[in-house]
Length: 113
Image 1 (cartoon, rainbow, N blue to C red):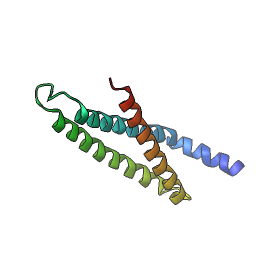
Image 2: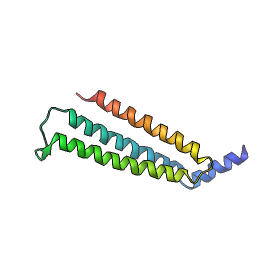
Image 3: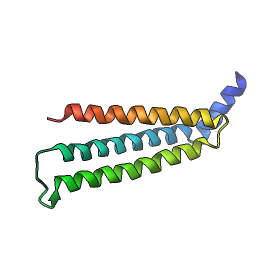
Image 4: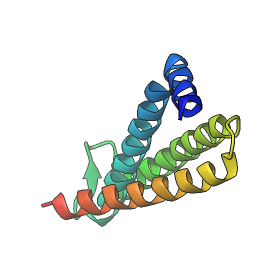
């Protein structure tokens, strides 16, 4: 138990919690951008701020959120690869990413008017 406590304290000293929260925050922002893009595709507005069609804006938001999500996931996986039992942690992290992102998109879709 003492060994685990020392390992935990070492992770806190390296700003592990800050990195975890930043990674999750970035994931949620990407999911919100994706939901906004899909909402723009399904909306009945033909112009988006008078600059471009809502379909174009929707696809651009989806593309940007996908690129940012891939960067965020690859960064999280790379950081986890340095830890012990990294394969199990990477699988768990990927599943958490998938579940959280899907749930955020569903929540945003349910909130649209």
